[in-house]
Image (cartoon, rainbow, N blue to C red; front, top):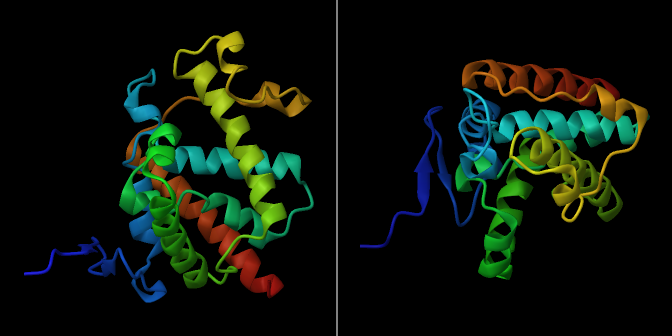
Length: 200
């Protein structure tokens, strides 16, 4: 018997992990999954885990600070930058590197299915990907220093230190899972409607 390569989602969809179809991608499943995947392997302070959903909201916020005139489609791409993790979890960067190109190709197929499902380009343009990656790394600085026990000097060895005025306003406090899930869905709804209205 062949090994099962699909996962049943709470929506009832069966997502084929080896050949994911955009038709089997639902935002409710993504929000549910990301709100239950802990960043930093759960090694953060507070009564609640700092989840990938919360991280995604932070990255989209920082991206907007870095690129105030960003299109709604670009901001939606930033919000969904870690969407495949609703299926595969949040693997730390060193482990991803150890797994090599096969993992990257697997992740890219999932991302393409998510993008197509929500009207985005299957592959993120290189310039936009770099801009989102910068927001992602700045997010990691805040998370490292405010939640994961890094000193500023230690964090500076691994992540860029935010120096803009807006950085002073970023204060992280992990929230209950259901609250984060609802916030992620609400932000997705705003951005996806803006994308549709703009015909992007």
